[in-house]
Length: 305
Image 1: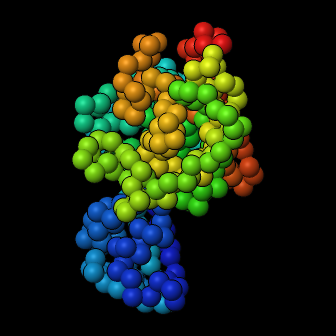
Image 2 (image 1 turned 60 degrees about the vertical axis):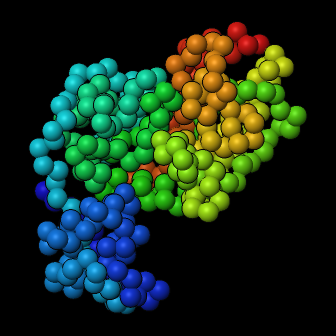
Image 3 (image 1 turned 90 degrees about the vertical axis):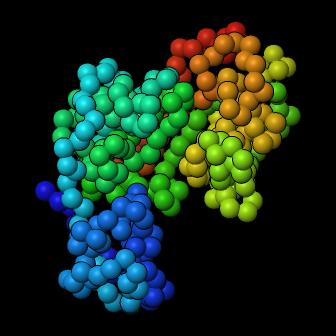
């Protein structure tokens, strides 16, 4: 069964292109996907079809119809999942190291999505398209920790909206190079694509998006490293990794933003998404989930003390 989103255009949005308006007033719908919905006659203004260049007017009633995902070409796989919590709306996973969240070129099997498709059957939201059912946010392949996936489009919209307004609690633990003199601090610097290496992110004052990371020093280690907790206000790609490297504290094991040689032969950055908290889509109460530090992280802390 298809899902519907109803929008009422307010004065300040008048004369905005409809594709831009829908992207800005929904969550996790890309411009190209919205344009396809318009072309397919699934976005109506006052009950009538329009073109992508139509400019909305104050008082327009807009209906967005999101089709149920067609047969997913991604195969369900019986991958063991570390499930922290599950109900009819959401599933909370403790993601292991080396697991890719959703299929992408080079990773069409063995991903968290393949495991979710097997575990949840057809109970996953379809908003993010056939390659990312249920996925409302993600963490990097070599980052471990807590992640929420959504079983319904309503839950997906509700949690994505909280991500959009930065009201979700996200706390990460990391081991970084060099000790700190201060006990805490913040990095407020916009992040965008690196200008020459498009696979990397970088602090980009011109075209970057607002990004804020707060950090708290938990322990200085052996005069060389530090164990820190990072809290995210925003959720940009590689945010903690870029921000900490920018203040000369790159993450231990980070092959992209770190100093290159890793003395401990780690599998990527030492970063763990420990706490995730948000308003539950059905109960409307705040819930918080925690994933304990993985064994390799605990062992590394012991070694570095």
